[in-house]
Image (cartoon, rainbow, N blue to C red; front, side, top):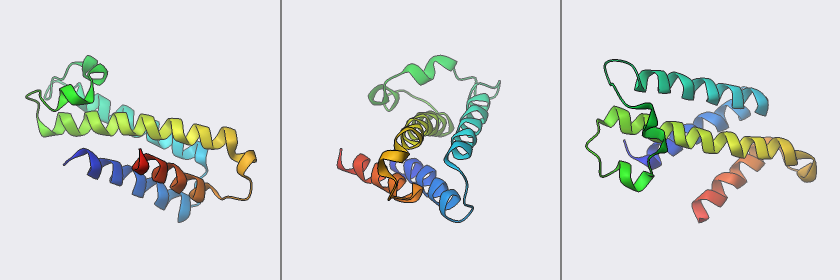
Length: 117
């Protein structure tokens, strides 16, 4: 599983939760934090035995390391979830400036911005 598919998984899941489940942005932030923490626990358990410092490694370096696909998946998932958490916090802080847009529209704008950069 590559980085783009992990990004797609997180974004589709978040969009579905906002759209279909009418989840609040703050609840979505909590959910992403919980999922990231759980994946981090799996990453650092005895079976995978990954060093917790792996999250501080640059993305370009992680691809050159000889790591299992599960560890790489966890690395990308945790980093992307952290990025989305920051984006969701931005939505919460700036929601009143964009009051004519719904949460899902703002989230889609952030996804679009990421695709352009």
